[in-house]
Length: 336
Ligand code: FE2
View 1 (cartoon, rainbow, N blue to C red):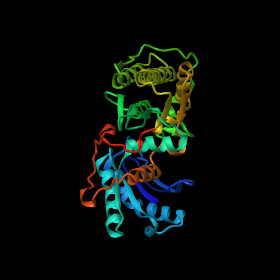
View 2 (tube, rainbow, N blue to C red):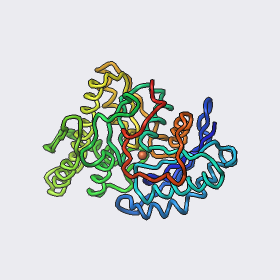
View 3 (cartoon, rainbow, N blue to C red):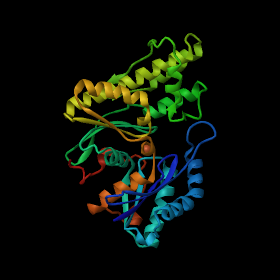
View 4 (tube, protein in one colour):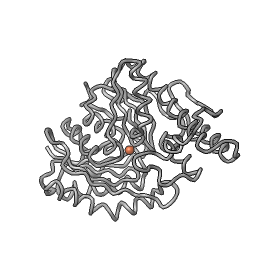
């Protein structure tokens, strides 16, 4: 079985092609929208996607050495994400499905981050820590779905980190040679001591907006060195994630942790998870950087799993869902 997957939820338009074992990944082509300044502007990103989509899909087919006739189904990320961006991917996928008479498979972007993580790391039944620009979720598979055990009450971790470094003049670019500017700046702190900034964990949930406001105020007051504020901000933000993850492990009894999403690439965060996991005698698995960010392969792979369980959607009913939550998706293939 061969599936073409299309991703367009945020900054990346991606086309991936996968098949069943043993070689899963046949092609992975991405076009990433990088704003000149500020955050992602959804309409600008969608215009960029429209220009890039034909090239990305054609190149993926060429790399796989296939024609669209060889494909068994077309998977598309219908949400969650930014409306204008989602609509480009959905339009391309619906058009291909109708024109070439191929089944259309709806995929939830969050589920796809988890499934590619499980595929590549071999995690079977982990506590999932999904950290990206748009999401901060602690989840685990229970009774047919990925249930949410904790999340952010306001900003996702990645958005928080990006906003902080942008506001203090360290970005863009946000990530240089695989290291986020916040981690980079924090390493320059000589004293490495925690300044007085708010640490907010409420039950199972985290919150970063108060930390952002207070940290920016401290930087602008000139009362602390930027690198010392970076260090404090990073330690507080990561520690909050570790705390809710550890509680998630205690609640669910899961024996492994899987880190997925773009922020999972942070080496510092990973080492904190490893320290926590060692004390509990559990394994930590991290999706490799290549597949931590958004890509078409994860959509194709999740589409393949779904299609094997008969999940398809009529093209005229394939609406985008900007707020399609992880725990609204049935996962009939998820039993470990
Ligand atoms: Fe993502």
